[in-house]
Length: 224
Image (cartoon, one colour):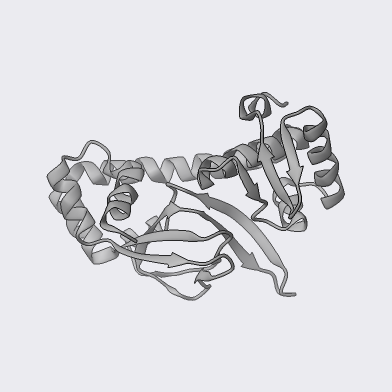
């Protein structure tokens, strides 16, 4: 990842908002970065949780494994999202797995370095608390969506958020249909039917190679 990409990585994160350029330069100097190919594991259960992780570009699924080895998808990380904020305050081990769904750029800041940042720039501490609140709100929103929103609305939101995260209008579904169905609380067959319906309405085009082209993101966001 280039220095320019590292700068973008820091700029993406809400906890660093309102900092001066000189302060951002200091943060950029301690950022570690790595590129992951689709299917690569970013972290595993029992790994030490010792750094803040920033998704500079791409999409990551975070999941747990049931006793029978079956995956339970917890949430998705999109461009600009962070993970591992609990690592900033105490030594912990991860209880989940992270896998890149598409080529993904990750930035990391070690706990020790981040704690020094919070001492130097107290405003970061306040922003971290806001991020915790946002994460809780996201999880609550996901639960509410499954309980109250239609499958069409949940699928439409997923498609538009994925396109925005990947910064493209045409993409291959990062999740397998069975995993996407589980995530959205429905079945693979229903996913296929809803995609066909969106295509008939002109919102998307399904192309060879399992590609999805977003034709009208605004209309997708209005689906209820």
